[in-house]
Length: 315
Image (cartoon, rainbow, N blue to C red):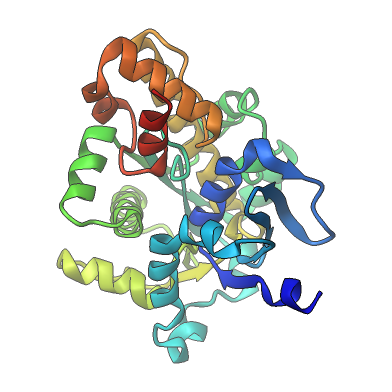
């Protein structure tokens, strides 16, 4: 029993990594304990992920499961070691969520196929309750069938927004140049917010809320490498869509753009592409390589994901 208790690793991961993990272990999930995001069992042991970002690897060979996410963990560890003395400076007051504000969120980061999409939305104070009443909430709590209808309502209400799509060829090119997914998301968030600020011009807003995927100091570091700086009144908070209706609205439109691109790419190769990064995705990759050739993956997928290597092993 003592040996079993020592056979565990506990680490904290980013939201995007948790999403990738959830998709990866999709067909190995079991009933999670109270407060857990998900639990999965493999031949190496048990993986339990919590909403806080903490992941517990237990069992016979926890290191084997942990090492699957080692590179992601390294970046996350650097984020956690960032200058935390400034963290409170970037934590939004709850007052923001009841006032006119901007929110931004992304979609597609944990999916092997498809692009990364990001959106920023400006919501006036008087629209907050209206958006809640029509069902605007975190897109992960809404079915993909509901997304187009909710996004259409947002657009018909003339809610100001700006969105961008980082297509797969560009994503893969940047990744080869050394960009992490974190830096890509940072720059996407920066540009959609910048475009939205120009669109709303002199409209008042209490602040800008970004669904936090890295420490603010890491976000600023990424911006500095491209000669940009953080917009004034920018704040970060995890699970922002649970607090900010603007972030929730942004998540809906970002998801819509992702779904539209997935449909376009599916039509491009005449195959309905699967979402996520599960074993089923590995098998589909193998079929695509056999029928269309490996090169087509650069047009439709994030080729650095481990799924590419696993798919080749299935051939």
